Length: 300
Image 1 (cartoon, rainbow, N blue to C red):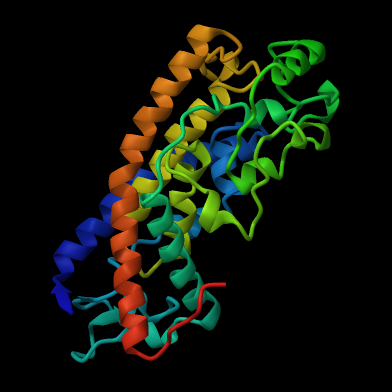
Image 2 (image 1 turned 90 degrees about the vertical axis):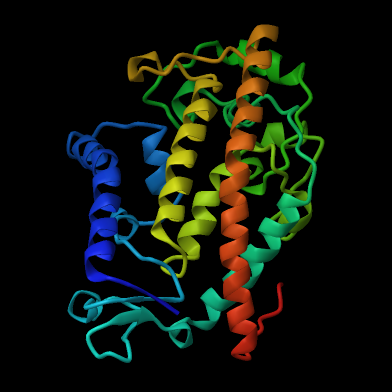
């Protein structure tokens, strides 16, 4: 284990809070005013990591923090180091459920890394989620749709739906599911997720917070901000009119819009690569440590 001096870890802790506070404060203010924001709300509703946990800094496993016992004593998984006043994460404190998750996340990240990216979906999942629904029944009913119900239905029916992400597909309307060429399930995620998918790349944040506090908060933070950027494209390409939020629509109902969407999708896939690699490496280290400790967990 390496040791981080008090001045250094306190500086990292402060910077982590500085980077996240603007987003968290804006979200708190919107909630106080009962204002909806389909981009940022998504990061705190669909993704269930609490803001208070997100802003809590950790160096990750395998690090000793100098003179940190008092500050970290009440945090779960932390124990005093050999020097008495130092603190470190104790792998023996990891529960069986999180241990299983570590192994599963490692397998998923490895599978996605080795799979070829597909860029032919054009963000149609958001359209499939409103397909043949009344305006009052759609998820973001507080925002108008750019097209009529009939126009949305006609466009969806003339496209090739090929969504490979279970957590996007499961929100399709019942009528839209039969139009999708794939049938992703929770059990088939290891075999179906691919690195071109916006949701797969947003989910790097999910896997990062499920690996917390055992991974570096810098990695968690990078995955969070990537997810926020990608979600913005996700909603810009949706059938919702979100100009009031400063979100210029990507008109995927046009050929030019689909070309723009694919360029952005490729850009985000490229941007996600190093974060996925860092997560894979961090998960791999945890897997190796758990195996050495005799805590091997089969991937279900």
